[in-house]
Image 1 (tube, rainbow, N blue to C red):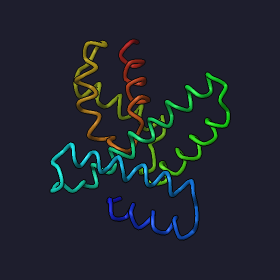
Image 2 (cartoon, rainbow, N blue to C red; image 1 turned 180 degrees about the vertical axis):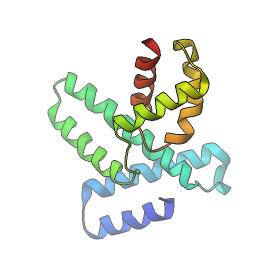
Image 3 (spheres, helix red, strand yellow; image 1 turned 60 degrees about the vertical axis):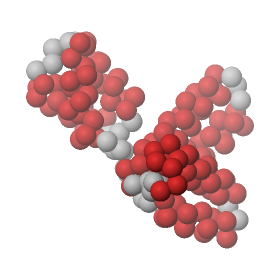
Length: 150
């Protein structure tokens, strides 16, 4: 997914008068703009990896907001954030299932010779390039901690 593809999607959603999709795409494109300015100013163009990273951050923000709104009993905001999360996830690669992640974690533990939580950084260093963009980092971290605690 490129920034231009997102802009094209935005145009289509505006023509279709899809307010939720339009506002969500505007927010993503805005976050990309801020990212580009942060990285190098007007001359910097976001790469596909940058777009993926921004989409993942936006999805994580929605998940965090959903949890907080549920805890606060704000069901109308939970619904809105959930719909935005669905739209954002549609632009992300298909996420790995927990079984696949556990298998990769086991391989990384064997590869690094990790034996306890002090070795978590080594395991994550080997693991993250293999799963980048295809799994939630929080879930991966949780699985690594569980495996290294036993």
